[in-house]
Image (cartoon, rainbow, N blue to C red; front, side, top):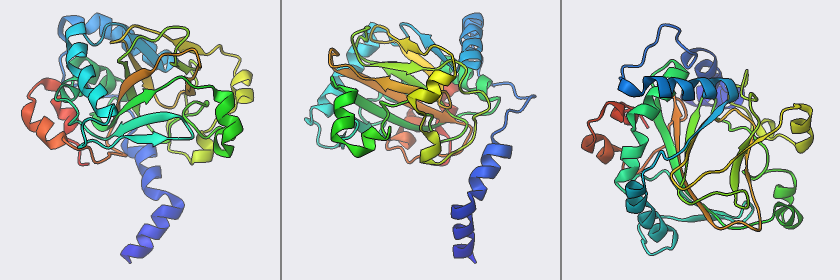
Amino acid sequence: MRNLLRTLDSRLRLRARIEDSVLTLPNPFFVSSIDPGESRERLLAVLAELSRNGAAAIPNFISADLLGAIHPQIHEAFSRRRPDFVVEFDKIGASSCIRSDLCVANELGVIATDPHICWIVESYFKRVAYLADIDLRRDPPADLADMERSSPAAARGYTANHWHRDQRGRQVKMLVYLTDVTASDNNFAFVPGSHLGQHRRTSFGESRVSDAEVAKMEVDPVEVFGAAGTAVIFDTNIVHRLRRRMSASTRDTMTFYYTPGQSLRNIRGIAAARARLTRPGAKVLAGRH
C-alpha cells in the first residue's frame, strides 16, 4: 500500500498539489511574531515593492565588516583550499556552487535569520517561514551564445542564464552580491509583475521561458546592479535569469531560500546554527528538513 501511495503521489503530484493549493496559501489573519521595531516603515516599502514587482533590492544589506569576515572564507572554499566543502562545477551553465551548507562560515546562519528579512518574508507569505535551502555561487565571465553553441541543453534554454521561473511553488529567495556588480558584470535580471498567479510547482519544461515569450509580456526587464553587500529579495515565480557577459569580473553570491514549509532540503550545519542563535528570526531554522 505504501509503494502504491508513493507511485500515485509521484504521478499525480498529490502532495505538491495539496501543499500549493491549500497548506501554503496566504492566511489573511496571520501576523508575524517578529517585531521589526523602528524599521517598520522602511520594511513596509520593501514588502510593497516585492508584492508589486516580485523583487526588491536592498543596498548595503551586508556591512563592510561582515562582508570582510565572510567573503574570505567563501573564497577559500571555492579555491578548494577547504576540502571539507564540496564545490560542484556546472559545465553547461559555467558556474561553481556549494549547496545546502551553513558550515562555510558561522555568519551564514546570522544572515539567514536576520529579523528584518524574516519579517518581510513572513509578511509576504502570510505564513510562518522556514529556511528551505542555501547555496553559494561563483560565476566567471561567460558568453551565452558560446554556451548555446557548445551544449544542446543550453541551446534549449536549460540553464539559470536563460529566462525561467523556479519550481518550488511559494518561495522567496534572498540573493546577496559578495562582489561589486556593475553594468559590465554578470547580474540578476527579472520581469516585473511576472510572478502574479504563478505560485505552484511545475515541471522543468514548464519553468522555462523563451525570449519570445518575454517579449510578448511587453514589460521591460529590470537589470539589478549594486555594490558588494547588496541584497535582492524576490519571489522565485517571477521570470528571471543570470545575465552573463564576457566583460564581467567573477561574481560571487550567496542565496537563501525561504518557503512556508514545503521543499525543505537537508542543510548541513542547520542544527548547530539553531542551537547557537537565539534572535527572533532564528525560528526560520526550525523546519523539519
